[in-house]
Amino acid sequence: MAIVYRFAENQDERLPALAAELVSRRVAVIATAGTPPTFAAKAATTTLPVVFLVGDDPARLGLVTNLSRPGGNITGVNILNSELAGKRLRTCAERWSDCALEHVRGDSLHADCSIGGSAPTTGGLS
Image (tube, rainbow, N blue to C red; front, side, top):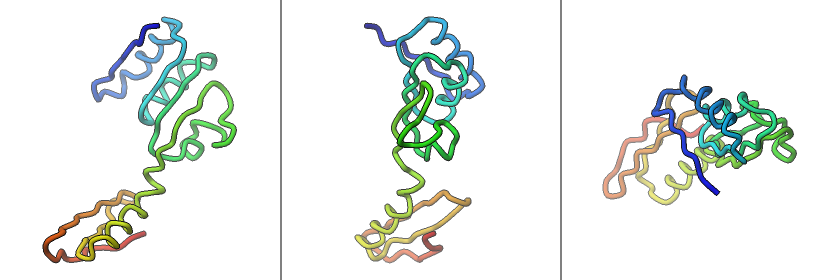
């Protein structure tokens, strides 16, 4: 068995060609990490298995038909970043009472935790 790596070097426009190359090499499976590479692999083949790791709901993204039965040649792991972000911030706030929480840019959540001092609260949880 050989493992073949391909990297787009932060140039998402290269992903379709890289996925097509893996398909032409007739690899046994394509493994991806992240949404853009997964969409490129899904578009490149309907027969080779694609196994992904994404941080959002794959059904909501349109990668699979539903989580319990993904359908087609694609399956993977969802690390639920978007669903767990609020819970992570709440846990931080509960653990450190001087944790400042901020909600920025729609659904992107950031926490600024200062354990030793009091930090101003600049926003809220959503």
